[in-house]
Image: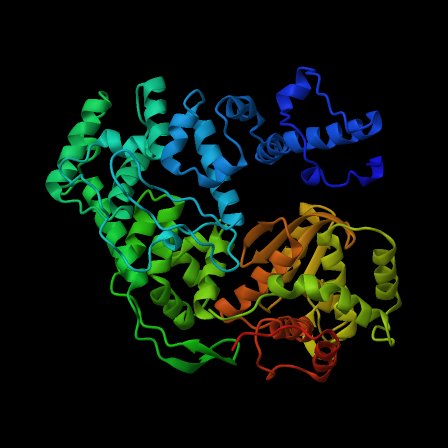
Length: 560
């Protein structure tokens, strides 16, 4: 057998050889192989033995948790074990480590299991019974996991030997990573903060809710007494503001928000005119939820976790969207729903837009397929006449810019194709009115403003506010030019949403226009109508240039 014939390790029939044999230098007699063949074979065998360890080491490295590697080796935890492990195993396996390590590992494991199609169950065949939770599923275009997605479509009664009266606080805390972390924090500090008390209340209420165990007042009182016994510095009044108590109230809130979200709505499809925009799109007729006011009070006054905020938000979607349609200004909306003004408020924009347009496509779905085709289109057949834009495209192709700079440059250049033709009566910096025709630069800056620093951007926003016209949403970046910037923001009515992805910023900026019924900036309306065509199949607002461009790049339009 020649050495070049040893190509497949599995095809060679040899005595049993282990990785330990190789590491300890055990002599293996292989009389049918020459020295060179033996070296080839041993190299292949070594790689084969190292493979499982290499996989788990690489996985832990991506999670930034390499400190677990030696422990996993000693416990014989490999990739196959991680594919089968469930949440209730984690506290035992990671017993030597801090609870913060356990929480981080559970989050990483959950994301990884979902990515390989084997979702992690919250509870499964634990020592106290067979309590199951359906695996969570991700929602469209939303970079976070919704707690509602983990709900089973058809509720079933869990098979558990515990009734609400004999279920203990210890059982609840021991089967919840946040519960374990709270217990550890108390043992270390001998006290709870107000925020930690709110978290403890949520942990208990969510346990009953998730596992379909009915919580009555007597069981709630029993849990409250156990809290005082387990955590001696706590007092009953911390958990009772009324006869019903905070745990019972939290449980009831969770029940009604879930019911409001999952109740079938008698929604008729009808054509609505989106007030300020005057654009006709097919959207569901909205009927305010019965419990929406209670959701609003919870959002305003209760100390809710991020998951509970999302649940209340979704449970009041139609009520809120009706108010947006009937509002006089976005400032009125912000007063009642201040969550929009938070740095992460764009998440709520995304959720509400998704509720209105459930079957809509997205720029994020198609951009990777389209961006190179758009560049080819702009560079061919003299579609752009502006010399500076041509040079920018050529420079972009000759260098290797980041994805953000590449995407910004392409969209910046599209304004050279969609040359504005409208005229406007505007004030200059000295307050003098004049009739002017919008330029390519006007179009570009109404979409994307580039400032060297925050002060330059603030001066630009101040100048826009001095005009008699309203300031529409736009994107701004901090940097030298369109091919060299770092920070990305969407500006909307005084709110500045930070982003790490330029295409995501464009996606949210577009959704703001539609959600709040705002007109596109006149200077860049043709460009925004093209972006709209990547979301909706309607051709109502498409100009001839958009038809030509769409025919060239053949985008996927699936919003019907």
